[in-house]
Picture 1 (cartoon, rainbow, N blue to C red):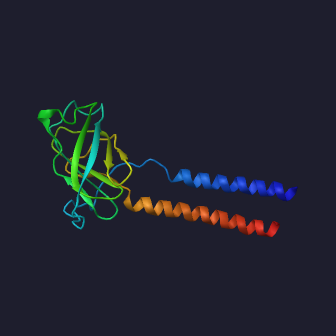
Picture 2 (picture 1 turned 120 degrees about the vertical axis):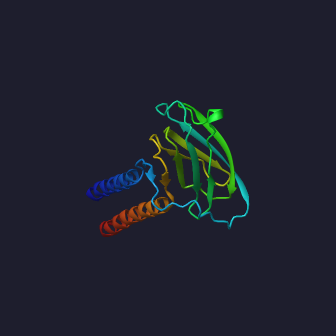
Picture 3 (picture 1 turned 90 degrees about the horizontal axis):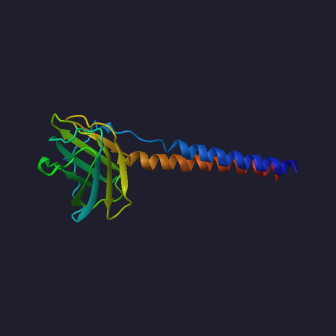
Length: 189
């Protein structure tokens, strides 16, 4: 009976540790300035052309409209990059506050999109809420900004290296927990 109670306690402990490890990896990420990002590094190994649906929502606390030049670059962990030097069009009301703008963008075929940077040039200012990218070859991904884009700086997210390493660390931590439990239980049974 005592062994069964201890076994039950160890299983609860293992599930609690696994759950806490999982939750610690899902903290929200904040956009950052890209120190070494370079749009001239576009890998041309993928000659094919693919289509991406990009929906950019502008925050209600953004200026009513912007005349700033807005650029976008996004891609996958394999160096496939999609770059559009200019998305804005002040005449059409693009990037007005409390609105969403949809763009059909063609570019090299990429796998799962894991990084996105926006670039703003001008003096009006602009505050995107989020950017959602739907691609042919991956799950839709949404990047949440909710902050002003600094002037003349590539600003955004790079989850490419962190996505693999954090999932590997999580798997390794779970594996170690269960190995420890197996070791302990082998002495009691």
